Length: 390
Image (cartoon, rainbow, N blue to C red):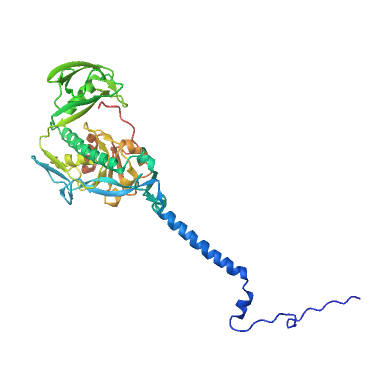
């Protein structure tokens, strides 16, 4: 019979003696490697925090687009009226016509930091794009800013001509050729410096006369172009080209000089680019129209404007709609060319109407003022109109 060992008594002398004192248990059972692990953890945490801090300030090759300020073209700026008209009668308006902007940040020379990029990705109101989208070529910011200011100046002149033409006011123009467009019938026939004064026997008094004459001729037609060259009038035969929309193209770049019947001044600070043109033109139309087009509506919008009143697509439409709602607008006029970006992104409380021309934008305002909006085109229902000559 084998002996069965007895269980050891908890008070047996085999148990090692323990130090006494208030911290006796902690000191006895804390292994040495635990202390090392805590130290390494603290160091790792510090290095991680340091790394994140460094990353936060490192430049990132992105740009951000956020809702920018809006400006009432019928209102005042710090420098006075946004639109000033001298030399003819103007009329007050009860509503507002707000041009919208995008707050743009980031470039090749001034990169965003990573925190800004991350915040932009998380915000539904901000768009983050690779810097190459807006700066495809390595060029400095000064070039872009100068171009933006030039586009703003051109948009103001285009808006004035388009608005006065829409109102039936004659704006005489001297249409000087800068150069023929490569690949068109004008190459080798029309020369830089030629002043275009007639098309198919019609004298050109305004820029609209040129547009109308080309519309009558049509793309592919041989037109008789009267020019002044070195003080002598000449008649040249040119085959009209075709624009992407099917309308006729004379085939030259021109630099028209306008003789306005009265003074129109537009002043808005820290805004560049061409996208305010449509709202400038509507502001001029409203100020020169005895009837109040807008009623008491706060209408916002965007869009480039050509001399013939064509409304063109712009960038940042989503941010501009958000900025419009923020500043009290309930109606937004969007270029029809932006409808794909409008659908599905309209903020709550905003009615968006699509326009292709200044005439359509004016008609939309008139419908709003009369409370008759059922027949207005929205981006959900919009379809391209038939091509018109430009």
